[in-house]
Each structure stands twice: as structure tokens, then as C-alpha cells.
Image (cartoon, rainbow over the protein chains, first blue to last red):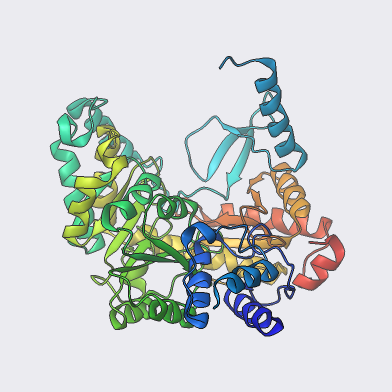
Length: 81
Length: 415
């Protein structure tokens, strides 16, 4: 599970953090905290789907479900067989 | 529902919240024509103060140019005041068509369609040319009107770090399975004053079979050797699929905008773009004014050349005085204060010294990047810039920030 979280954390940090920004932790609010804009959720979703060979329905890919590394990891776990 | 006390109270509380957060916007009343020298009533009810305007989008100084005013008068007499119709019913005059042809020539594109504003152009263009099978990949610092247009469109949305070409390439690879890919950027970014890497973007779009849209609102008329825009500066004239731009800044400063580009895409806007279909277009008086603006710009590069000299002079003066600036070579010169209150206090002190320049802070710019965005004009003379520079230095000494680094300013004032 920590591997999954770290993979997500590394991806989100590389994708969204600007140079000099404070590092993220598993509970940092991503969307409500303004780090991940709603436009970019799609690439995060596509990254997870490709990486874990899963399909996350749009109805489950809510901003709330993507709002922290912990929440994203929970979401992914639901779909990984 | 009646507008009862509870509803009124709800809105009063929201407005109070804006005031408490220091983000309540107040207009300042200008009692003169838009120009380098303006007379301002601020705060409301106070006596008029003559100040140097350092924050208008009047890049080419054409907002009150006598030839433009005369042309507008003639247009008003010849074609009337309003159209009382949308374009496709009975709201298209010969001069609207003429302006579309002249903008096509000016921008070096295939076709052009006018919109009531560039905000409307950006609101309408995406849904007119894309579907849910497509993807839009935008720079994260694009103008709010592009963001609104993207939100109105059913295509997949994605974004890239500001001007990060490696990131763009990875996103083009990620979305290779989509029917169409549209990359979206500003030509000149309005808050930072930097320029998009259009040459590199065109190369990537060609490599990955993507289209490119550029908002040229802060570029049309003065960026590039003959003022055609960022695509001229970057050597990619004719290679931009969609250009959106405004007549509300360099090109006369009144209002109106357009989508210019591949003829099929422009025609799709004419058939499907809702701000075009359901709103009157630009009034004849403004069309006549913009036609004269294009005549002036086609006849000589004098005004954009002067603007370029003014911007270089201003940037050099501020740098030598010890201010921290955002790097760039456009007429947008952001002076960095980092701390929101400092930017507001500095702006107010400048006003007392006869210089009108507004401070911007979060959420207009990222947290901790408060600034005063100064904007140059071909209407500025050197004496305007010298006086404004003296005011900046005087106020800079008062706040003790001259020669201080970003870190030192943040240590002194916080961010």
C-alpha cells in the first residue's frame, strides 16, 4: 500500500509542484488546496488507469476522491483486482 | 422567490467576506480620455488628481488617437450606432466583413470571424471545434477567459506546467489516442509578461499531430518586428491553427475580438459558436475605428518601435534602481513585492506621487507573488517614464526595498 502511495505521491509531485514548493505528504489537500487544478485530474486518472490496468468510472473520479494521496490510493485499491 | 431580508443578508455577508479578505474591487473614476496622462477621482468624491497611467492596455497609444477618433465619427455617421441584430440575421455590414478580411491579412491567417469580445471568442471557440473525443491541453497560466471556454467544452481537459515543453511533449504522448489534440497558450502571458515558446510548440504540435491555439490579446499590434504578434516574433507565421485576440488593448482599446485561423475552423465558429450566434457583434463605430488602427499599423512600425524603446528604457531604469522584476522583453513589466499588503501600500503611495499602477495579489497571481504590473505605451514620452521612475524610487526608499533580493523582501515583509 505504501508503494502505491509513494508512486502516486511521486507522480503528483512531479506533475504539479512548481520549483521551490513545499513537499507533499499523503494527506495534503490536492484539489481543495489548489495544487491540482480540475483540468489536470484527467491526466492523473489516465496515469493511474494505465499504471494499474484499471478503469475508473467518471462517476467515481470526483474531485473529493482525488483530494489527497491517501484518498486516491483508496480509490485505486477499489478497482485493482 | 422574493428578495427578502435573509437573501439580502446572505449577499451582504459574501461582500463583507471579500472586503475582510482584502479582495474587494473598487473602480477609480477617470474624468479624461484614456492616455498617458489621466485625471482620476479616487477615492470617490475626492478632487481630481492628474496622474501618469502605468497600467493601461493602451500599448500603442491609439485609444484616443485623433485619426482613430475621426474614423470612428465617420463610421458612426455612415453606418449608424447599432445593428439591433445578431450577425446571421441582419447584423452584418460591409465593414464587418472588411474588418475580418483585414485582420486575416494582418495576422497572416486564412480567415477571421469577429466576436463581441475576446472573452466571447475564447468562450465560444472550443465547443465549436471540439467534441468529447478530443483533448485540450492548456498552459497553466493562460488567461481566465480561455479557462472559461475550456470549461464550457465537452472535450477532455488537461494542462501543462507553464512553458514546460518536456511536459507538453509527455501530455501529447499521453493523449495520442484522442481524435484531435488542441494545445492552448497565451502568446504573451498577461501577468508575467513573458512570451510563449511558439516555435517549439509548433514543432511539437507537428510531431504529434496536434493543433495550436494562441491568445494574442497582449501581443497583437506590437509583438514581432511588424507587430503581427508572437507568431511573428517566433518565426511561425502561418503555422498557428487558431489565433484569438482583442481590439480592446493595442488595437485601439475599445472592445471586440476575433477568432482567426484555418478557414474550416473559423467557419465552424460561424456555424456553432454561441457568443457569435446569440449576441450582437461589434458596433459599427468601433469597427470603423479598428479599420483605421490597422491602416495606421500597416503604414508604419513607428508606434510599436517606440513602445519597444519605452519598455527597454523602463525596465533598465527599474533594474538599475534595484527593484526585483519578472524577466521579459514585452511592454508588461511586473515589479515584484511578493507580499500582498506591501503591493497595495506601494501602489497607494505611488498614487500619492502621481503614478497610477495597480497591485495584484492572490488569487489573481499565485500566492506569495504579489506585484505591481506596469504596462508601457507608445503614448508615454520619456518625461513620463522619468517622472514615474522617480516616484518608484522615492516610494522604494520609503519602504526600504531597493537593492533587496526576493528573499530579503520576504524576510522584511513576509509573503
